Image 1 (cartoon, rainbow, N blue to C red):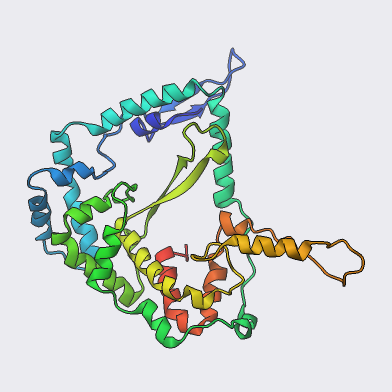
Image 2: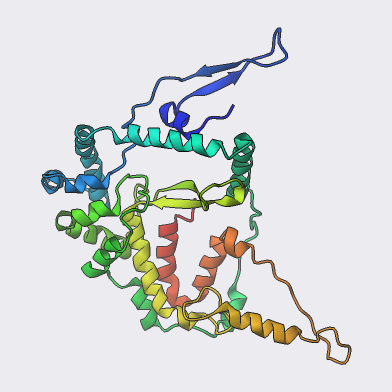
Length: 352
């Protein structure tokens, strides 16, 4: 049995039982759990709420609550309390969810006209995504990269490493928040970066404390370090599995932390990356390596040349998956980056 997204939105707890065939050679399907879901069960902050009179007053009233706990826990609890207030305001402005679902249903009908077998596309998509996410070969043996340490010619000094783990500044946190696209998909908590921008005068100090707490302790609450994985089309009319790509919808506070980490390590990456690495490095071009490879292979089959060997390396893993245990062990070999490795491990929740 296949169900589209509109069905799953309306009846997320529905299930079916495949009964034994009787007089017919077909097995009857028995549906269960058809109680319609409350449309407001999943909270999503709409950016238009920031333009409603009294928006900041609503945030300030909730932010006056005293909550015992860490800085990160305090923000998580207050954001949860705000959801009830924003749900009320969304109801007063009309049911946007219903309008979106109607528009989506119309779009699905239009796309169905260009598709002969949507069921096959859906099944192949699910199969491919499960294989990419969960079916890849794993590295079971323990890693010991101690032998690499003498070969790490591009090292960084302790002073340069301190730049990665130094206490954050208020301007760093603000720049990271305001650098996030306001139209990007929200994370599991439902809040967009537009909310944080509009309420910065109220939330700014608490956000600064929460981010600073992470850089001090190296620990991140699971409510913040939670991610939704969604599939989005890469083309207007997707027909094949390759026309979709997965994205991770992260909470804004998590994005801010990772942005700060990325900006900091960006300063010292040129010191760690060999000059022969040209791909995916700003200011360098992979074309240089392509031209060099062509020159090296010119006349390769001539017998008068000395013995030589060419290796074709499968770099699929550079795109499809990441072996975090290998990357962390490699960072560990840079002894001055051990503390930054702890931050990376906490932000990626790599123990799970």
